Image (cartoon, rainbow, N blue to C red):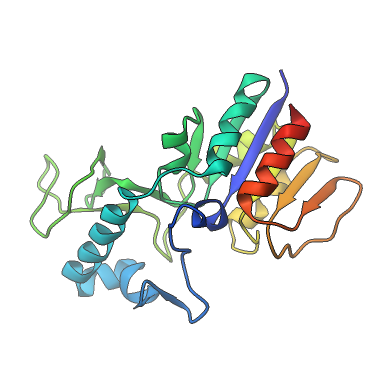
Length: 224
């Protein structure tokens, strides 16, 4: 059975109503990202940061997977499929995808701030004073700027064994995620789906300059 690796970014969830990480003005939901997406921001104002992610978590409960998410599940009928996503939402899982690796964490989980990080499923608000069983404050299970990306090794291992790559809704300009395709076997076929692709077609790269739903539908139909 051939192995497909999907690299997904904000564009795959945008059609479900999930805001992209940063708007054109450099803000995320009206906030400077350095205030709400850095360890320093959390230390300086934990109430602000926790409130920010509590609102993102509540928003996530109001949205559903779109056609792109659902069509990727169809690939599992004929292929081994791994999804490596930069998104912190759970829409791939809601759609039914079985193997999802989150590079930047998950909104529906928390971690404790102690050295030995416990990771827990968490769907409600996090407040200052909420602690793990070792009495460490809980924080969103999200990789902030300046922090290591713990799932990178797993992602590199997945992509090193792939037969086909599908890139959806990401510019592939943000590192370290952008460097993942360098670990794919030579001449791996790549399907690139993005309204404004920043890559040129080649013998190995096929480009679909459109939104995630229509592009994924075409690619999945072709592969099946």
